[in-house]
Length: 257
Image 1 (cartoon, helix red, strand yellow):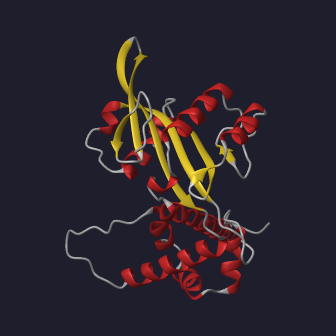
Image 2 (tube, rainbow, N blue to C red; image 1 turned 60 degrees about the vertical axis):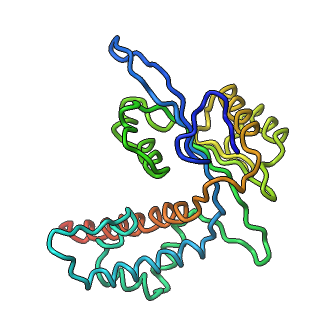
C-alpha cells in the first residue's frame, strides 16, 4: 500500500490530495494540492501509428451510423480531429497510404525501438494546486487529470505545476542516488528523469522525489495509463496533420500576385 505523509488517498493508488488555504483578493480559499501518480509503458512509433489507423477505421464506421434522436456521440480529442479530416485523407490514414503515414511518423515523438531492445516503463507524476470546489463530484482519475489541465485555471496561475517522469526497472524505481545526482545538476531531460519545467526548483524536486521513493513500494500497484499515453501522442500527430492540411488549403486560397 502506498503512503504519502500529509496526503489523503482520493482514488486508490493514483490520486492523492492535501488541503491548503490560499488568500485570493484578501479572502481565504480552500485549495487542493494534488499528487497524481501512474505508470506507463513507452509506446513505440509503430504502436502510435497502428492506434491512429484503428481509430480512423472506427471513425469511418461510426460515420455511417445514425444515432437515436437526442443521442450524442462522446468523442475523445483524437476522435474529434480524425472526424474533421477530409474524407479522402481519413481513408488514406485508415488504409495506410505511404505519404500520409510518413507525415504522421515524422510528427510522432514516440521512439523507434530496435528488435530485441527493452521497452522502458515509467512512473508518471503530476502535481498542481486547484480550488477544492473544482473537485466536487469527481471520482475518477481522469477527472482529476482534466482539472489539472484546465486552461481557465492555468490562466490564473493554478492547475498543473509539474509533470515528472521517472524510469522504472524490473518493477522498481531507478536508484534514488542516480536521481540525486541529476537533480544536483539541474538536469530536466534524461532517460531516467524528465521534468516538465527546465528551470524547476531543485529543493522542491528533491522533496517530491523523497516523497515518491518513500511512498511507492512497488511500481506494479500503480494505475496503468499506457492507453491514455498512446492516445495523447496519437492526438498530437493527427493534430499536426490537420494543421498542415488547413495551412495548405489557406495558401491555395490566397490570390496570386
